[in-house]
Length: 230
Image (cartoon, rainbow, N blue to C red; front, side):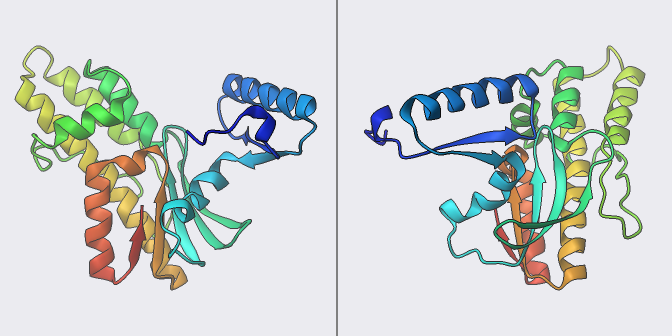
């Protein structure tokens, strides 16, 4: 799309981690080979730093400091970001990442992969208040997350109603599950921003595409007088 050839490259940037070791090895090997043959500099990029700073590509009016929520298939973490390269971890998941929980629940219900996309779509047709799934670590001042409990609650619910789940009921299940996950994500990142007295929040990572997360983050931002960058 950039109408450039390999010969035009002045440098190579490559994800060096964290992530799946197979993908990282392939990417690093390819990048090192290109940099060696072309005799250009190579720079390793931290995957999570990429998520946190990608906001500046599309929303350059975002400024430091901000609180960043990285929420994806492999990561659910909150950071205090005071400048480029200045990231202080404030909280993280103690078990499953949010995206991982979406994938596992979708698999349990036979909805396919990736789970986040299909759950997002089906949840719009369901009742998010139909089933009271747990919101782990929602009480207290901890900024950590836990999603294994809500995943297990869905599993138990499905087993208890095996053979009687209509398409309508499945939509209620995914809507209620999604609401539980989103409620905790929104509450924790807003709690972090309030504690630090920061009025900017950046939400990044694959799960940031979730429609309900966007809606609730923006609504909470207006309520708390915080600017939300997604």
